[in-house]
Image (tube, rainbow over all chains, first blue to last red):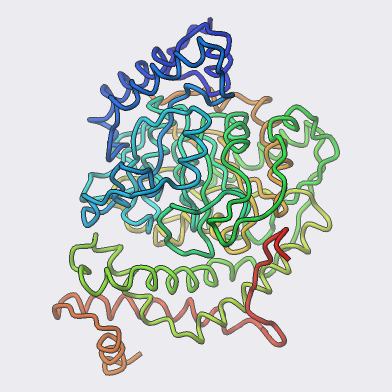
Length: 470
Length: 58
């Protein structure tokens, strides 16, 4: 057996060993609970821990597997859920004390599917309050900390997902992404995060932030694990009015196909935005690596790209304020102040502004599709920088001082606007040993090609094998 | 947006807050306009609002 600690085995590795009965789900769950107990005082990844329930479920999984009732690759695998995925009977805070005692009466579709697949829930993960922020700061339940340097942000809003998966507290976790909330913490913590196409994974039972831009998706340490998880959580759901009625492929099947001849486009306009030089360097090295794998690289122009974040922000502000309007009126003063301001500012987006933004979105979508006539995938850095200290409100890159929300979403938010699938994976480290991410974007419902290119890149590099110094 | 319009919109929404918070929000809201103005730069002639089609549900 592999000599690394059990808590750093991938989902795929654990799955093979459990299926062959070489390890028991009980051992796997215990290893993760011990890891959580030793790291939680430093990381604060979780809001609610469920060790006893997890132990019970592990014993049950062990019994089933010994009786020959193996449910599939996630049977007996522990995981975490961002604390806005409803799980029947388990409190769901959305990262705010206003919901400290709220207990949902039904399962989100994703939680239900994972439960049916035999996966074992370790707990509910910490997040930026209401998922409305990019840093993973939360004054009520405590800030999330980056496992690579505890003084730095884990990123948000799915910060607890990023820190728990990178540190070995969980082999995988499910996050949500409205402007980059899966990809930002995944990149800052050095793991893989996939925001699938809008409609691919059900949103039913995930607390909304902005209905038309919310996406649920997996976060794990390898691309292969994300593919395995996608096989379970994807698919049509009649409870979600925006769910796509399309067949779900086996995402693991395409992984091993070579990427020779795949056309990759580097978005010219994205690289005109402020980016730290070391991020740019890692990005171009990753592009070279993909060229070595015989992908065909070209530069593409996406003129409306620079408008993407503005269009998406207007839509998000209006939708988030609409969803939380009662809460803002009744309990505004109890909301984490930066989130309170964001929520209240949506009051001033008029119906006309919202519709104009939706018209602009139609143009953005049309131009996005045009790009894919000449390429199969698009590439950008995931973020323009690495993690920075908790409490930072603006970051200077070159001569430009930028607000952290705009900065961290400049490459991610445009793909919430068009709903195209986008994945981040580690592609390097800065001099101070902080992870850097590469973003790969695909055509709508073509997660397969995104995963295939990401897998080929990951197999040819070892960034994903580095572990934080905890 | 002037203060009078700001206050009337706050009232219409039903938001009550202390003076210092209102001042902070007033300053914050001024930052929205450049974002909105960016959208006004685009030629949206003949474009209808984005209406996603949900595959398989024609």
